[in-house]
Length: 113
Length: 114
Image (cartoon, rainbow over all chains, first blue to last red; front, side, top):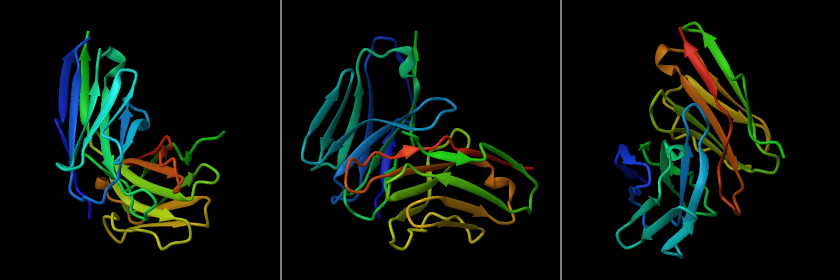
């Protein structure tokens, strides 16, 4: 089955700096890679996702890059703000298949004011 | 429209008792997932229902755990003879299977076994 590894487990950055979280996956058939944000005491929510037919996707201050050859993808947050502080989870799956989403172990991001 | 709902929001039970957790997915979502999240930990996959297919039970930690789903509606997760290590937040999520594939999570049920 699929295995997703996520690094780092914790990340602290100064407000305004950039943050990068990296994930690797094991199944080359995976073609869908979402990122979820979970604020303290709240449910996870999708913030961005990417399909394997593109290498990069941006949405304002958030971007995700995908390297299919190396089987890794990354979340980039620019101009970080205190409200970006949360746990971020990456995941991998195969769209249209019966296989469920496999999540990484999460990264606790703290943005210091 | 209404999102994923779960009940109860909190459940305190004594060790050895059975508990039943309920999830109401978004209408029309054929896929439904249960996860366990221990304090400060990640999302541990438990079980996945996809339409009328046989559920993927590969994440259930023991035979004390079981889940059912009637068609594409409500699902219940049952934990028998609860143990203290079962204490966690149990999250349910639902999604479409023909895109978009976003999983919408419910608010979770916080289970405390004393």
